[in-house]
Amino acid sequence: MRERVAIANDLRHALEHDELELYYQPQVELAAGRIVGMEALIRWNHPKRGLLSPGDFLPVVEKTSLVVTLGQWVLDHACKQMNAWRKAGIAPPVLAINLSLGQLQTGDELVETITQTLTKWGLSPKDLELDVTESMLANVTLHKNSVLDRLEQLGVKIAIDDFGSQYSSLDYLKTYRVSRVKIPRPMLDAAMLDPCESAMVRAIIGLARELDIEVIAQGVETEAQRDLLTRLTSATKVQGYYYSAPVPAFQATELLQQRLIEPRLSQISEATAAQ
Image 1 (tube, one colour):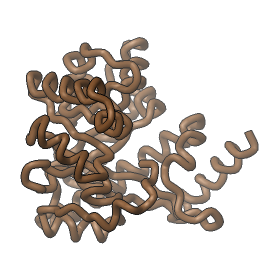
Image 2 (cartoon, one colour; image 1 turned 90 degrees about the horizontal axis):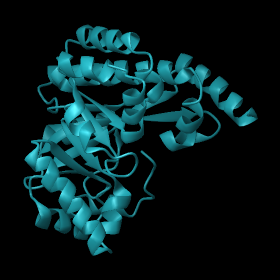
Image 3 (cartoon, rainbow, N blue to C red; image 1 turned 180 degrees about the horizontal axis):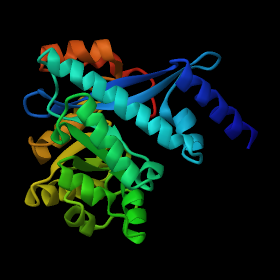
């Protein structure tokens, strides 16, 4: 409890004193190496603890009302960066942002915040992808929360993060008209060792193809993983340290200027940060 209170108080200070920063990780077309999206990932430049990744503080923040304030901060700053990329003529096709359950539960407030933020920065709803987990979908389904339906009708893309790892339901793919499913890193790791897990990955890719849903394989860190995905289908999109770690905005801008991205083998040896 003391740790939770301390982090919450520190985060309030961070929001007021510009200690938060967004990093961006490219989403890459497997076949051609073309950047097809950027995912915004929050980092906290804590004055005493150093650079903190989401896993260091989000589990605590998600238990407080600050999660909504933090989500609004991420949305605003990510859209501001997308606007800058658009003006420079290098904007990616889509900008991905992770939603929290707390944000979804605000309903009308979330829809209004997203609409106002897109208008503020001159963006279209189709520029934005909102990532939710299966457990979050189970919650909104149980409580008959229509917020995702309304966002989808607005034109915002919906993606299921860590697909197949929590409360999987094929009905979610139809009900929420998702644009993408994201294969989690542990599933991809397991597929390298276990034929059954490889079959699971192949099944997800096949199902998504039949439903005209894009697939992004997350946590791609080795050439062997890339080769496995290539054998399954070259249409898959990929994201991971094999191509790029999450990087600050200025480095993401350099990547977008290149348009194509080559594997960055030097980054694979880094300790993989929680995203």
